Length: 232
Image (cartoon, rainbow, N blue to C red):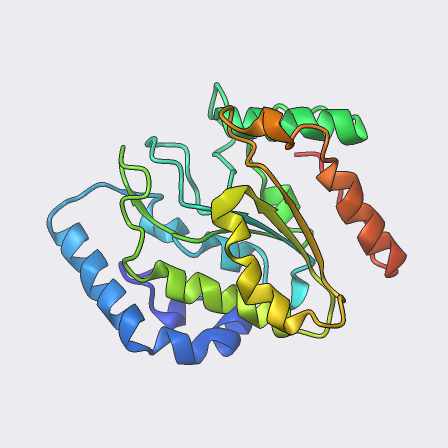
């Protein structure tokens, strides 16, 4: 992995889908910005080797579900490039992830204690943050620097694909991305699940009881796809 989001570092099926965007001026400006941040020794999260981890863990042709996050955890040692996921040694878990696991337990009876969601990603759950880096301790510190151009293009590429996808939009920020999906979903082949965010500030407004995990699996099974094993 280089210190900038070069297309040569991206998994090949995603590289093919996003090649035009990867060579665009907004992404060139993002590269320049990230280089400058690194030259100034600004601590960036996650580690640069994990910046594109969501794409590496879940190739384009393998995506069955998208769970969209906002940006990485700003606490050093937590983020590793998958939305809502933390490294396996992290304790205690972030509060939003605790609430996700509570809803999973209530929905499907699954008890998870490990916050590393890599097993989900390996089954086709794209755990994508809209912004892929953050300065340590500064939530949303890299918004509007160019990452959104790349991740919006990824969402649109999946929405344009013939194979159905479940898009999970938790919270107002993620739900704004619905505008990228709907123009490609006139035939309703994709399922869009949305609810309040699992944050402690909003989970009690409708995230709890929304049963997203069983809805995802029902949708997949109706189309002859194996369900997601949500254990971690």
